[in-house]
Amino acid sequence: MEMMSKVSAKRFLLVAVLLIGANSIVHAANIQISNKKLCALSLEGPVSKGDADQLSAAISQSHINPDDERTGSVCLKSNGGSYAEGMRIAELVFRHGLSTVIEYGSECYSACAIIFMAGVMPDQIGPMRKLSVGGILGFHAPYLTMPDEKYSKQQVEDVAQGMRAAILALVRLSSKRTQLHGGEFLKKSLISKILEKGPADVFFVKSVSEAARWDILIYDAAEHFTKPNTIDIAKSVCNNFHYSNMDEPVPPNTNLSLSVEKYSSRFQKDDARILIKNAKTSDTVCELYPRTFRADDQVKFFACSYDYWSSKSFGDCREYKTAPAFRVGNFVPDFFEYDPAGLLAKFRN
Image 1 (cartoon, rainbow, N blue to C red):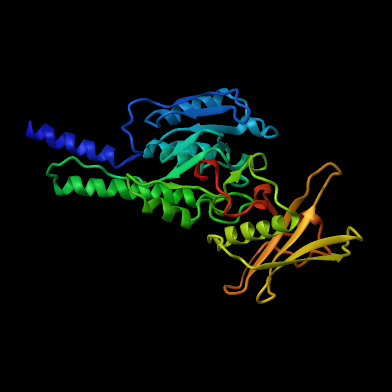
Image 2 (cartoon, rainbow, N blue to C red; image 1 turned 90 degrees about the horizontal axis):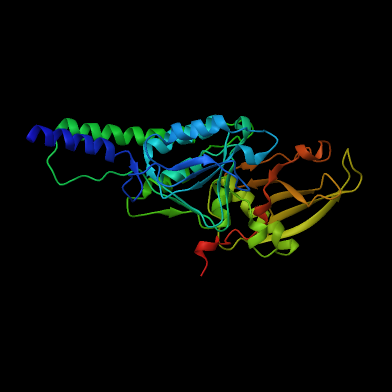
């Protein structure tokens, strides 16, 4: 009986170290072909062993069309579960070039949040994780729960090795490379936030600036936020763009001034750009280039920014008078137009 107890304890520890989530996992997730508006695949429920195989089978039965974003997207709704299985699913999502979606009213925690962050464009062009204003995304670290027993040196070493392997898997996911996205696939700041949290703690993505910082697309911002005036749009685009590239939180009170400069380019006689400066020092922080590529298009922004303290710059606007418009600056997602401090629905008073 004593030998059986030791074996059981060891098995418990090896399993426990691979759990990420607040609840015991006894059922597999429901993974299936979906008729949802945004996704052809869905994963709902606790993440447990065998779910990666389920998703692989569902992918093989679906028909992914590179020209139809929905066919390569998976909707997620889960409180978490097995960390090890979540990492296997994350690898599968990345390898197949699937984007991930948390819809309005859906929650995605722990192992589910790791799967969400594996979302990517077809052919691994760049990250593609889509979060609704009314969705909830929460992280915490893989954690260990231990029964009140005595353990051998080997058992403790096995547990330590399991925890190291769990963290290494997260670091490897962060190091994934995509074709057009030069930065880290998961930024170190996010990994730090994840590893800070224990079993009873959850780190939530709460605001526009946090989503921007960690390369998460708020896909329905226009439906749930009030449209700001033109000046505020330009300042918000600059703040969200600059500080997401700096991988820093947006300061609560940035003092920016704005001016419009007209110029003639190689491709167009009458063109204009927006210069946004530090109002105290007059240093240029951002250059914004509003673009419409068809008559019925809404305005899209391309941007460059500069940090004079660190000598860092993002985007390349030096050839703005001679290069084609789409090569000047970096593309800015639409939701960057909203106040960086704007809260997602769950976190508003």
